[in-house]
Length: 378
Ligand code: SF4
Image (cartoon, rainbow, N blue to C red; front, side):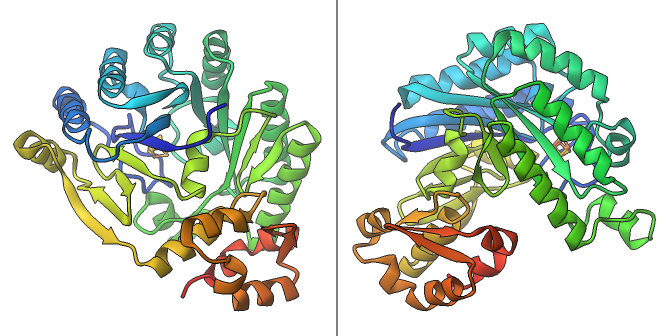
């Protein structure tokens, strides 16, 4: 398998309806803009082809809900990428799909366009919980869609969530058990994050919903990790599990702090020492791209210290941790020297462990990972 190099992210900012917990850059009721958006993103892909000359080992079409678009648009977007960028022969090409809007015609079209990995957002196996968080699909929609998808794809991720409002431990157990029984190659398991400005946040403020406390949330996380590992899924990143050979290459490139180009409204790119993002508003994005092929709205020049810190706290998200050889290759000195205080403190606390040349989170470290990461900021 080709070593992981650079990646391409394509943001499709449309959803059929907004889920109550979602603060992603996605919008409902914008069907009128689908065509002009597609034309704009194709122009952006073409215009920016000189920005990052490398071999691309992954493409990720995310959102939003990419499957709200006519599938021919996805084919056109991918063929524009193939025409303008060098992809490795075994590049991982993922598309995110939401249940309720998946059909055979779309799956055939994605397959034809070179997609070889799909990611389906289930979240929970209980219709009442799906409804409570504003998902548009039911469990039976998911079962039907998953059955269809597995006819065409053997590399499938299922997203599930814990710490949902009013979710019981039994609910979570049922979700996990039924998902494992489907044997997807990859499972992402995220705890709900209550984001300000979302309907769920307002419901919480009005005392209309009850959320899991930290202890209950941690208990679900541990239960999930144990059950998934017992069923052959390797816990390779804090929230991600995969059967052997199916770790998500695209997500790994973020944690490995490698370069990527992001196309579409609100999409970020990372090239050289610069991280820069497109404007979030879809109509403004389309206008800017039509006018001069670019829609950059936010540029962040990273200092050497920023780069080193990011390398550490992104890398430590992976259970294999950060290897000093890689740190030295990137920055010319040892992480054990640059971050000696942070490393010493967290090893003393039993939150980090050194194994040969690598530094990893311990089980206790995983539970309080954000506190550990903070120590790696200058
Ligand atoms: S489908 Fe995904 S992106 Fe769309 S509203 Fe729901 S959580 Fe947000």
